[in-house]
Image 1 (cartoon, rainbow, N blue to C red):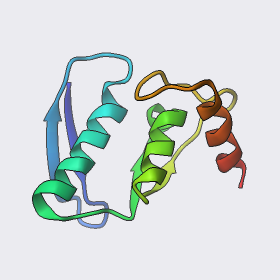
Image 2 (image 1 turned 135 degrees about the vertical axis):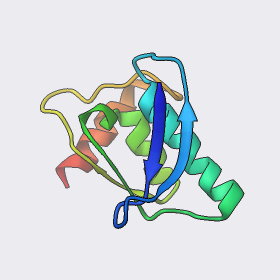
Image 3 (image 1 turned 120 degrees about the horizontal axis):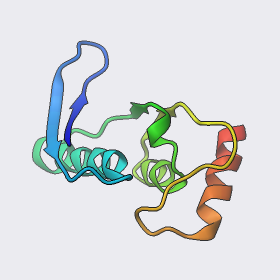
Image 4 (image 1 turned 90 degrees about the horizontal axis):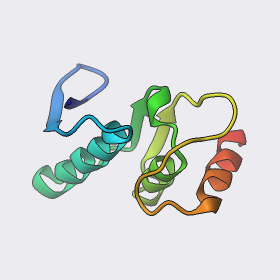
Length: 100
């Protein structure tokens, strides 16, 4: 899969990544590209937008740990996700934060 991380206001592509097409490839690639921006260009975005495919508890908690506010559409029902340090309580924590 090909991934691109774009600046929202002007549509400038900030980072690109290639990965295998697994069920969690997009959120993993997004975190990798955000880390690249910080390491290579000293850019730390304040927000990160995404569609319903990015609503996994671990992804949203990782953004929060990096002090990035997630602007992610969240599906109704249980928050999914199986990548990055999955713990049973992460979905519940992310769901509570979603309700705020």
